[in-house]
Length: 103
Image 1 (cartoon, rainbow, N blue to C red):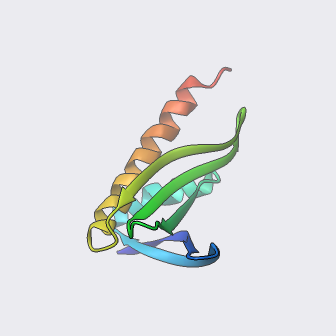
Image 2: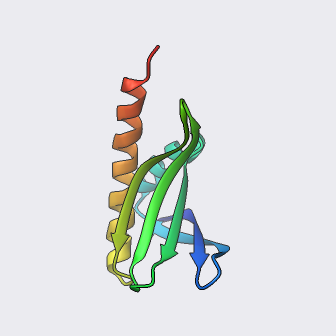
Image 3: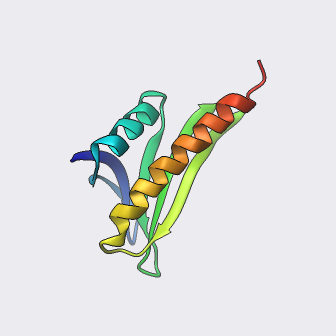
């Protein structure tokens, strides 16, 4: 198991801290590919108690920030499965945008 870095925004003032989510080796390799092209992962606990998970890519083509993937997850054991889904979706989105960029 490996850990993917997330920036976590804390309530009530949005203070940031680094946190890590454990993922399988396969998912970690995908996350590293995304990180190596500049993507980053964020997590924020919402007022509902759920967690917002995002993967964004800054300064991508015409986009200031390109959201590759986002998920809302219960704040419990389900979060691990949702982190993996987030990373897989981010990879699919990134590959899609690569194909769609004008040459």
